Length: 456
Image (cartoon, rainbow, N blue to C red; front, side, top):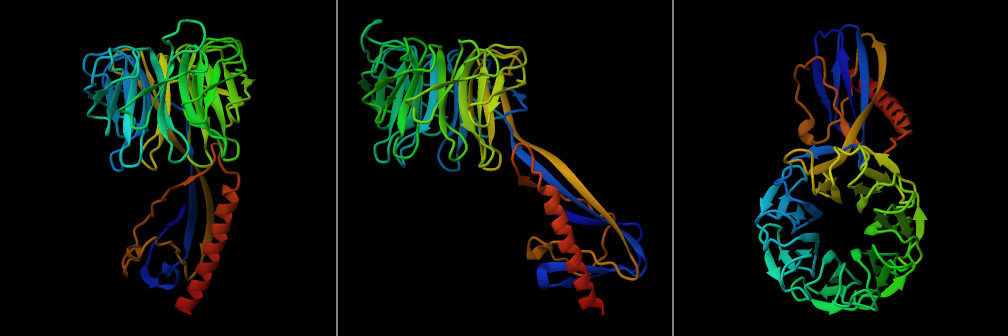
């Protein structure tokens, strides 16, 4: 927050520098009217207001994530259609570039992770022969890897306790049909070498996430089939246990996040009546929540800057309501999507200070619009105080660096109002007026003291 003076008239303006506090005192020989304006910009990490973006190709985009080595971080999206271009990347979620996929498989999910110094993007596919995994250190150059089996891989994540982290992938079909347990899980320490694991049930597993409270962290997978067992958990990605799902809905996506002290797992589904969300503090005990609408919810993510965290979900059905958001995963609000695309995935990421939610679609309206983003939104509050002085007026301007202290010079008029963005909660900050008032009193007091010290 900065302040500025706009003056009615200027005569005999002389500027002198006061080193104390790096303030500039300006004397004016005639009476002036001083207009002091303070503008506070309120910024929120959004998830509410969405803007359509141009995708690199009109493919059936299925998943997106944020990652990459230091200095080269990027959004990466994968698709299940296209010829040699089933990957696209973006440094900011706005401008996208196609990349050559390692194979024209139907890529379903992508994640970033790996041991320190060996981090990589990993994508898994539902088609292909022995090559249903591809990896990339930067999102640009991709290499096929031998998958543990040729089944319908749907979700992949990186996680695990310190020193034992692994990639975990889950599938919707297995080697054993309909009964017993199957090979619906595979794991890898590096994204290159994969091993089959036994799933807790032979369900249609759709997604997997890592999270949980300190000392109880776990992998959680959700499925679209099964009877009261559409969740399974594992502390290591190898040994899995079924958990009672809150409802027998078709659970498509699961994530971990939330405000500090209120973190939880949140899952969304594309079936059910008013209960297409379920939450759990530990991945074991689940509770249904009222979804904002009975849309076909495909993906959910946790994002937002500190103090502005929220969950955001996207869907492939509904009219102008294909986004919903929640501050706590419990109470959900419908948001207006940029357009009615078949939104398949949403993620959070971006360069520091430019973070945003990014959603990708399988189908758009017209050509090249299968991306939408929602980032920081700024509003402003302005407080103005008018005062009249005679003989002398003291202008007080805060200098942020030594170079901001100007030598004796004429002062331009009117001075421009400078806005500075301060991170505040989504609902704004009711104390901003008090803060502004306090600053004004401090400025006025310093100005009067500085005037007496400088000119008397």
